[in-house]
Amino acid sequence: MPRLSVRTDMDAEDIGLPGAVAPALSSAVFDVVTSPALIEAEWRSLESLPRNSLDQSYDWCCAWWNAHALSPVILRARLGERTVMLLPLEIISRYGLRTARLPGERFNNLNTGLFSADFPALDGDALSTFTSALCRCLSPLADTLVLDCIPVAWGGAPSPLAGLAAMENPNPSFQLPLLATMDETIAQLNAKTRRKRFRQQCRRLEAIGGFEHYCPAGRDDQHALLDLFFQQKAERFSGFGLPDVFQPPQVRRFLHDLIDRSGSGPDTALTMHALRLHGDHEGSLVAISGLSRKGGHVLCQFGSIDDKLCADASPGELLFWLMIEEACLEGASVFDFGVGDQPYKRSWCTQMTVTRDLVLPLTAKGRMAMPAIQGLGSLRLAIKRQPKLYALVQKFRALLRRS
Image 1 (cartoon, rainbow, N blue to C red):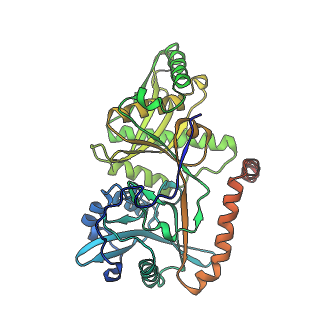
Image 2 (image 1 turned 90 degrees about the vertical axis):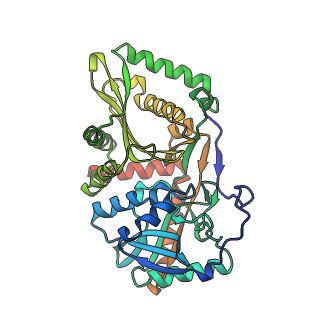
Image 3 (image 1 turned 90 degrees about the horizontal axis):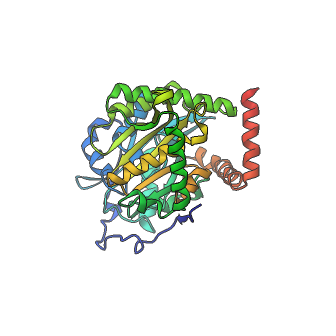
């Protein structure tokens, strides 16, 4: 297993922050926009910057809002006529508490908000100004602001939100830097063992007729792959006695909409890939994954396997090899396995990104709820750090599901 480098705090010098002095935040004007179409041009301009996550892209957020019939809330900051920040949100009411949060919930892997390249660092007076603006604009709409999975730095720039984040998120994410070729890329790992395993997997599948990396260009075929993924994943969740997070129709509409919003260029909201068999099992799809891409960042959103045919060939792992190899050839710089600490991710990755969660009270009711919210967050983190305890919790959830 490769040695992981953990990415957490980086100062401006470490990440090459430009030397130019950023404009003062005190002169910024903050407001709330409720129609994404009115600010689409400035939104797409900001989302193109490397520092901003694809999970806050225009298409991603609009697909989520539309699928769930939610009213968009976008906090905007402007300096003069120029938009320097957009924070897309949704308002959810639970247990009498109104919570503003980023669209996407558990389906987001890394959240940055959308900030201009020269957005000022949030410290001292700037941090106080920013927090006051958040409360002033959002308190009529929500009691708390919850932003999860915030990196301290991303895309070569520090996150302006990092100074507000108080709790470590219990789920790190894992990345593999990509080099010019697959050979160079796996040289970062236990290359000899991985090449041997790849050859074994290929031989086992060739013995039953062969295989191919299948990524259809047609929208109808892409949607059919996504529907088959839902079926495979439901069977896996059922086998483990776990709830199927992809079962709600709103989630399925959201992911289908992302396929429809994906263009023909390298950047894509969601593209489906599969391992397709030939010969004895012609056309059978034994592993499926959904990938997103922004610039050099390729992100694996989800995956499933059908282990009834060729489990000994580890089809899921073989599909990862083929997708990573393709990403190298296409000039991508990182293959991101996303949030969640699992052995197969550690076996592929040399980097682990630790993120933080922000909980900001906006009203008196929100301030009263803070001890409970922080306590639950600390409990989640403590459980995730104890593998035996976490396994026990998972078994308990499975028992509840079966009952």
